[in-house]
Image (cartoon, rainbow over all chains, first blue to last red; front, side, top):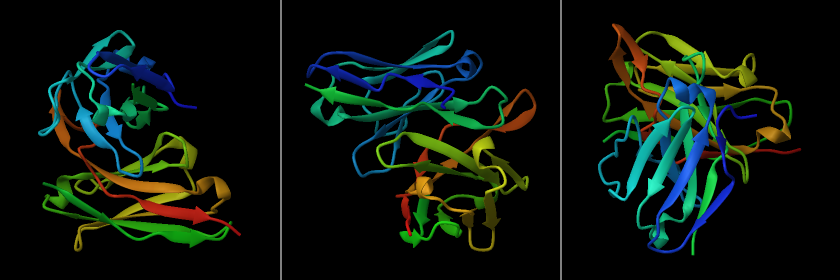
Length: 108
Length: 127
């Protein structure tokens, strides 16, 4: 079982704002990172650290954290944002990495 | 930007071993970390382990301890992941993913986020 917990599925209306969450004890001491994965493709890093976006990631993607919960927010969701979103972080020992189970985002 | 090229798809028999490669380019190989992450059909991502060539360090997820071996060939900038005693549940896409290091409190530690990924290697375990 994963040490990070994500909701299996979330939906959002086109143009609206959606928050995807990731919970786990390791998040009290480590930032979560977020990955977008479209069907049949490799994951792509969208958020890392406190709230950093790699080059080429739209600024409608943002990250935040409070206690044991990290959040990925998409402000003004677009059709192309429909994908699976995975979070990860260091585990409680700090030596390993853990992933959440992933959240399937549907844009209505 | 970093380029990670993985070996091709494989079909394996239960009980056998698999060995997947990941060749890195456009990066200082010795100081770059390569992770292995797998994804079973319809499932999430699962971290298997990582290698840090500059330190000669390898970390494995507890679930795979004793069954997985990650090695690096610096002469060819290639990392290998071998998984033994294969079973049907090992059918998955196996990804290599790159990770950098930072200095934190005087220590050099992995950043724990993966900014470059290979395209994945499909491994099917079937009799």
